[in-house]
Amino acid sequence: QNHYFNSYTGLRFQQNRYGVTHALNWDVKNQSLTQHRIASYYNAQCCGFSAEYQFIDLSQFSNVAGIQQDSRFHFSVTLGGIGNVSNIFGGLGGTNPR
Image 1: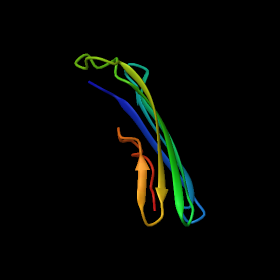
Image 2: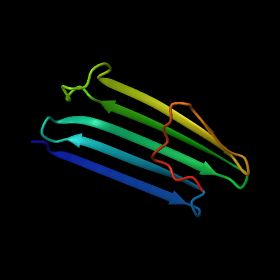
Image 3: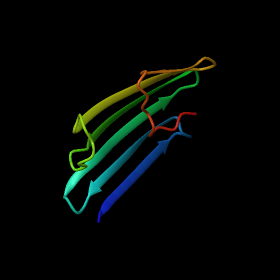
């Protein structure tokens, strides 16, 4: 039996020109942090920038092999009319680009 507390907060300012999101997953039964994520973005008329930090703890799941804890930093740049450039490993699931 599992008990989790999940939280998500998103703030947008200046008609979605910039903002920040925060997500938290807490395992209440085992008193441990499973995931913590914070992301921010800024969109100008011609370009934009996004950044995200994520911490994941998989040590409580016995069927997961390999890395038990991981911290990640993702970033992305958006150029108007061209598209966006981000790291090749994905990420930035918490942002809302225009």
